[in-house]
Length: 378
Ligand SMILES: *[C@@H]1O[C@H](CO)[C@@H](O)[C@H](O)[C@H]1NC(C)=O
Ligand SMILES: *[C@@H]1O[C@H](CO)[C@@H](O)[C@H](O)[C@H]1NC(C)=O
Ligand SMILES: *[C@@H]1O[C@H](CO)[C@@H](O)[C@H](O)[C@H]1NC(C)=O
Ligand SMILES: *[C@@H]1O[C@H](CO)[C@@H](O)[C@H](O)[C@H]1NC(C)=O
Image (cartoon, rainbow, N blue to C red; front, side, top):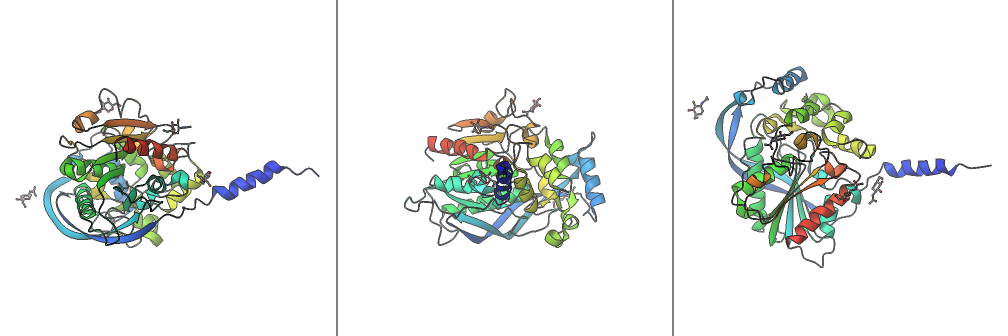
């Protein structure tokens, strides 16, 4: 009897398509108390009681006559200590003591696992530690195993920048943990909102960073509305009571994997098993975080280090679905943001959406980043 081995093959493909098991890395987890003293915005928003209200808020904020400035009430001083959960990874070949630490800041909808999502195809931490770097990936406040303070006030851009600033200072002083050596250099790598936070750190504290890699980012904010829509603004605690039942109503998330696809992926350049895993791991974001996107200055005239901005070709959030001419075009503000950078480069990663780590060709993007850092002796 003829046995159709194409059938066998497709079973084999199914069997390997599901597990995206992470490789063994030399990592350990730490929790760091971080003192924040920041000037933050207060917002005139009545706390939501259900998703009808949060959805209406979203509809109003992308409407033709939206006026987000009207929501900003005042500023206030926030002086608090937050517990930050982080994962530190050493270079894969411990004989080479790492000289450069990469601090990895994730974006909205993800937690620190964005950077070590799966096997080598989707694992930035593996690529970096293989290349001899140590990495510190942390959950921003309001996310994952870090503290979840008031999403209508505490969890906003200036606070996130203050947290990254303190973490960086502790890392430079060798005070993150007795097991983490002082690095010679520190590079900040961000994704999306994490790129905003990393850029803002370089603007406010230029001496704290030796280099920036801004992924899933641009300095053109014209496209925010089309990105906000798939973020959907469901109350996280209603969307998934089992996982998010204890969270304040100011923690929001989207409805399903297709919203996730629209915001972060570009079809067909991803594995649907990866989308499903990203949906399973999704992290709620805070209302104040969204409302404070423009609250941190990005212009970094004193920052002299190298800067790589790398975004997916079809990035919806920061390029309106087509990065050509946005990252590097004549209207791009990026050269004005980093006028003193020793090496400012932009790069469009082909066949990728906003969540470029989760696309089929992600690992080729890691090589672009690593070779940029090596070229700059970092
Ligand atoms: C990672 O897993 C995916 C899905 O199972 C597979 O297609 C890919 O080849 C794997 N990558 C590596 C480097 O093993
Ligand atoms: C903003 O705060 C300052 C200082 O607390 C206060 O004097 C002022 O009235 C407040 N303004 C508004 C619009 O609430
Ligand atoms: C943003 O991109 C649009 C093209 O869609 C362009 O018209 C506009 O000038 C750009 N703005 C900035 C600040 O780069
Ligand atoms: C994969 O990414 C690399 C690095 O950006 C790029 O040179 C290559 O063209 C990409 N391949 C595909 C099929 O998108």
